[in-house]
Length: 285
Ligand code: PAJ
Image (cartoon, rainbow, N blue to C red; front, side, top):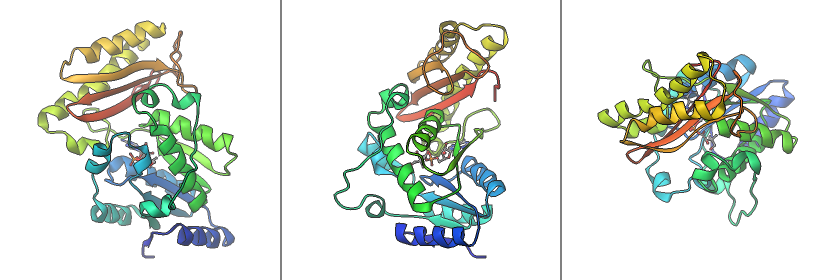
């Protein structure tokens, strides 16, 4: 069956209705395009859980706190469509901004405490943009299940929360982070890195490994684990740290006493490129 390309919310909702009436389960994988093996891994997980796999590609303007970042974001639609075809995606949703934000739109979704620290503090308005567009995508596609990466750990926590709080009838599935052989987490933003920045970017995963190693050696104090990670990344003066923290997996608040479920989480700039990564302390990589 040929892959469908849909670019209006009305057409997507009509298709969702038809699939549901036929008794088929729909899985949605929301993305901003510039697809890589991390996105493809979400498609595979979606495939195991549904009869139809839909992937959305929308570079959502409201989640960019910096207009230059939005303008520079990689847009590789033809390559993305080929990747989707190869991965067995049934339909790709490619709306424009007017579809997702009808003229004069003034409604948004805001998650409070969970969206406040870490990336919420570093990027004002970012999670309001994410929460709003994900809610709209879920309403438009009406999936039974939606798959998101643990790579964006706080984003996943925010999405789980809004789905519960707004009573949305969808199951949220988290997927493990896909990494390069040397540990660098795959990211659409890695395409900005030249050779030397690519080498510097390893400082993020190394800081997480340092905290996980200290945890494995018996350290449980949150501040000591945080100091391990922070000093590891501080050894790279070319990397400018936004935050390094050890937080609990649900509330995203710093932990006093770490458990195997606690998460090391880091954001840093390598040159102009902002990268994020995280690691569950009890399950390094
Ligand atoms: P984007 O950055 O394109 O990521 C789309 C999905 O792919 C997210 O769920 C993200 O966590 C996941 N992902 C990214 N890198 C990954 C990796 N290395 N391994 C596994 N999964 C990975 O996240 C967004 O887009 C947007 O904020 C979005 C949710 C689509 C809302 O606009």
